[in-house]
Amino acid sequence: MLYVIIALLPTSLFGIYNFGYKALVLILVTIASCVASEWVFNKIVHKKQTIDDLSAVVTGLLLALNLPATLPWWEAVIGGVFAIVVVKCLFGGLGQNFMNPALGARCFLLIAFAADMTKFGITKNGIEVYSSVTPLAAMRNGEAVNTMDMLIGRTAGTIGETSAIAILIGAIFLILMGVINLRIPASYIITFAVFMLLFGGHGFDGSYLTAQLCGGGLMLGAIFMATDYVTSPLTTKGRVIFALGCGFLTSAIRVFANSAEGVSFAVLLMNLLVPYINEGCRTKPVGGVKA
Image (cartoon, rainbow, N blue to C red; front, side):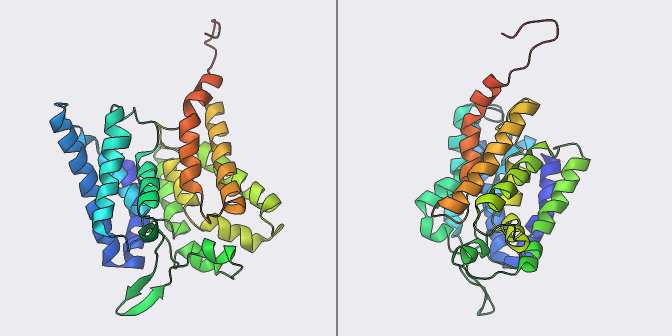
């Protein structure tokens, strides 16, 4: 968990730089609400305190990075409580949750507070820096986008999704530390890219594909959410199937649905299928028979 927190620092710091003090406040509030929710829940049900395992901190940080900096702080608190109490603790705590808590909370907030969750306009010193239109929404409307700005992160979006470079720095750290490998992220992103080339409606347009790869929560989701140990399959084959499904669903939502995004719902839907993927990909013990 500590390695994940360290890996998320580049994108967190860039998000604070990009969106200002509101991003910092939202990150601190969301982490605090997650840690407090776990402490209170354990206190009420007389369970051993588990906040020192840092999983609540990771959930709070990931949730904050998936929120727009303009979101009212009290809505972020509700999201933190939902992530920890409803998605995590009520199902047995760490290792028992059936879906990624941060993404579960993000989708809950997206349904409950749709207007606030899709408002990305940022002003600094009375001057509008970013409009409420994200690059993905702009492309959906046929507008041109600057792929270099998307790569660096000088765009509208959630706190942690804008800078592909910052996210990749964190990914390299996690790979070097042995926390994750490239199997799920690579399978996810390659599947997404192939689908977009075939059905995105722009043919083999490199600029369009790059913008789709850097836009939205694809990188953040593929590297930090889809690789969650608890909500991803146990076997190598299962993880590839899981990642293929994430890539397919993300691209299908972006191309055919009304939403310009799709990562959160794609990963959550595949989280729900993990038990079936595990059952279908059970390994045969050496010298034994498949049970």
